[in-house]
Image 1 (cartoon, helix red, strand yellow):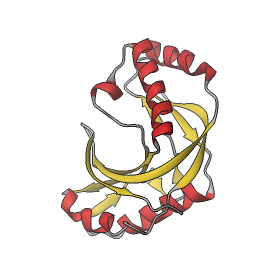
Image 2: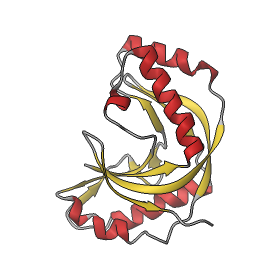
Image 3: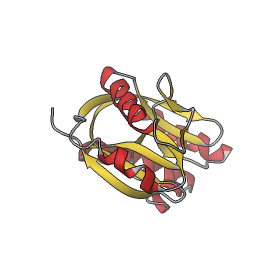
Image 4: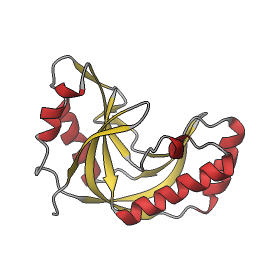
Length: 175
């Protein structure tokens, strides 16, 4: 499994990493920290026999996508193990996800996850995963003071999962 994800500006990373670190400290669940999973918003999950079949399509996106702004507005849960923050789905984010899907969906012998197709996608930024019930309750307590904020998408990246390993990143153009 490979992921294509949006990565953020340094200020957004600082805020998100702060939440990740606070939750890890309060819950004792260090999955995100211990596995060096950076703050990111997954745009596509794709099954492929090798990253080599994905690279030409991914590389073709260079210079064709601009940076953009999103508003991270809420905290949510994927029960029973994941807590996340989420943006509202604005025009920029819809177009970005569609562009990634259009680029990757036609690659032979690959399959895009049904959870990452246009109009079948819950954009979210995971703050902690593999939580127990007790850890989830503590994570929610940590996030009680959450306030919405603007984030700037500056890069997209292709990564392997389990463990997270960046394969390639593309700096997005300035609009």
